[in-house]
Amino acid sequence: MPTPRTALRALVCLLIVLPVAPAAGQGTRVDSFPLPNRPVSRIVAPRWIAEEDRDSYGEAETVLRLLQIGPGSRVADIGAGDGYYVAALAARVGATGMVYGEDIEPRYLRLLRDRVADEGWKNVQVIEGTAGDPKLPPTSIDVALMIHMYHEISSPFELLHRLAPAFRAGGRLAILDVDGPTDRHGTPPRLLVCELQAMGYLRVRREEMADGAYLMIFSAPDAVRRTTSATDVRERVAKANCRP
Image (cartoon, rainbow, N blue to C red; front, side, top):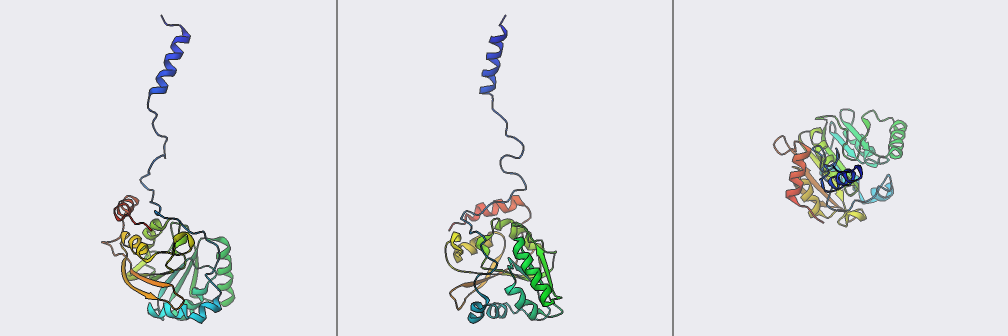
């Protein structure tokens, strides 16, 4: 008959060789979204460069003209910062339009809310989103803007997935960026097209800006092209295999 010490030694050996089941939550969850296969830039400022410099290049005027934004348009500025584009949009869409100024940084949101209140813009709604969700109402927008910020989105595939239902029929996404490394506040155009098309957004056109940046316009995914779940997103992203 084995002694208590011998029985204890056998039990310890058994525990060592038995496989250990993973703890709950470990591994890939069904509801988890993939991360980009590239670096992400830090969010460092509520604006790209001084507004006077941007005006001298005609940046906002050119972007809004190319997108044919006018009275009655409904537009979301994702990563609005302190409101450079929100100001231009509020004047352009008029009383019958709507501007959603979205950001995730509390300090930038305070600056934006103060600016909206000071200017008395009645056609602007400030929205606090998250890194993976712009929190826009369904079928609320004709156009979404991402101005010099796509490279700062830490969960771009989740955000694009959750953004898609916000578009009305014929909706478009316009991304303004520079051709450069994603950890240095740029996005190579080929990489941008790869990531967006994996999510059902189709390239429409590319325009070159006066300051050397580029504007890429995509059609938003319709019901057929839209991703349906985190699993669907993971499969599409893996198949696309987008790399810098």
